[in-house]
Image 1 (cartoon, rainbow, N blue to C red):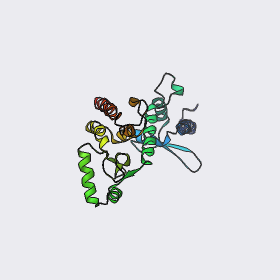
Image 2 (cartoon, helix red, strand yellow; image 1 turned 90 degrees about the vertical axis):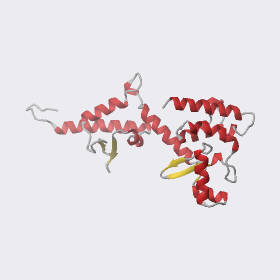
Image 3 (cartoon, one colour; image 1 turned 30 degrees about the horizontal axis):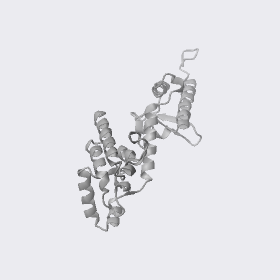
Image 4 (cartoon, rainbow, N blue to C red; image 1 turned 60 degrees about the vertical axis):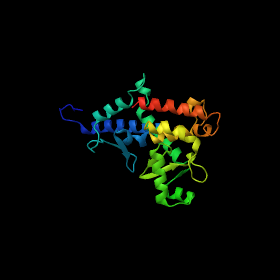
Length: 226
């Protein structure tokens, strides 16, 4: 902004930047999306001890200007027919995925070590079994925070593979579907099965073929969407 004598009034510009930055931050916090900005490749913000917001450009690491914040707001509100009330869809999707992953991580799973203990076998032997079954698309293996996880739902109480899940897992894993999405689909009510949980329905001989067919359709959709 320029004053009457032609000089740049930095204090007023700073106030406007601060107000816009605070408004954007408060909006994203109210939606529960603030923690997912970095994952979406978007600028991030932090609050100091007084609660003042500071936005950072992810490419330069420098504070964001007013023009940059205006562009960011325009981008975040670009979805929907009413920009003023629009929700940043990409962020919502990332947040939903993060919540789902947390839910999955709170369900039972094994590491090589804990599965070896259950199977009363060595860690090396268990690792070999897991890698072999995973390579044959008979076992879902998920990478998380430098750990290898084996979701427990696909195993019997003594740590062996549930045979009825093999025909269900095979098309999903062969299609290179995201392991997290495979885990989620198998363990939550599925629309393709009228709300039944696939891994549970597969245990019913009368429903097993329907579950397999649903898995095939999902795998085809996943492959076509890449």
